[in-house]
Amino acid sequence: MSLRLGDIAPNFKAKTTQGNIDFYEYLGDSWGVLFSHPADYTPVCTTELGRTALLKDEFAKRNVKVLALSVDPLDKHQGWINDINETQSCEVNFPIIADEDKTVANLYGMIHPNASETFTVRSLFIIGPDKKVKLTITYPASTGRNFFEVLRVIDSLQLTAQYSVATPANWQEGEDVIVVPAIKTEDIPAKFPKGHKVIKPYLRTTPQPNK
Image (cartoon, rainbow, N blue to C red; front, side, top):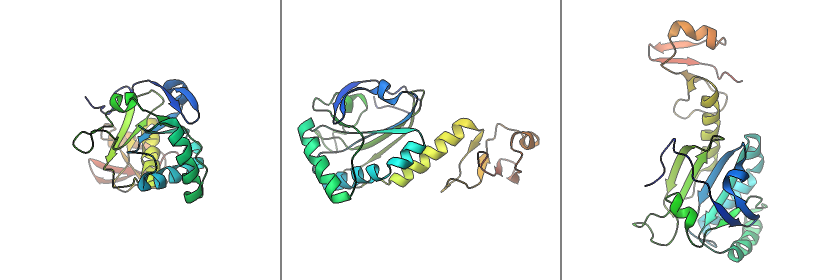
């Protein structure tokens, strides 16, 4: 059965390009992004890992640790990293898991047999400090991910974990947010002193509370 939102993300031990890791120990108290790739030395994957490396500071300031995975062996990963650094003008600075026996891929449901019986699809999991799955996204092998969207979702998840708010469509950091329905309108001023708007009884907005 595939992982669902709110499930505990399975722990695992794995060989990576930065040594052997225990997943939970690697994450510690951080948020995590675990994402898979169909294979090494493939064009879309090369751009994705390069983009992730270039966003190192953005992930770090959100207290997020990143791990990539494919079912290719470690020596192949190491050679591919050289190509990624060269072609994407970056330095890959996060672990890439060598999941040759597909242990992690199977734990996380990363192989979709109708797409490919042998390679992982582009699965991405955001995992909270409580080790629960907060978001899953799956792309086909032919479509590269939007990592700015991944950062946007992390901003929303971290905000909504701390405050009784939700984020509207196309929300970006710094924009107004939605007060959750569980809060009565008369209680909003005490919880959100920056002010609020009542658009409909069920649709109330307030400035982002941590800005």
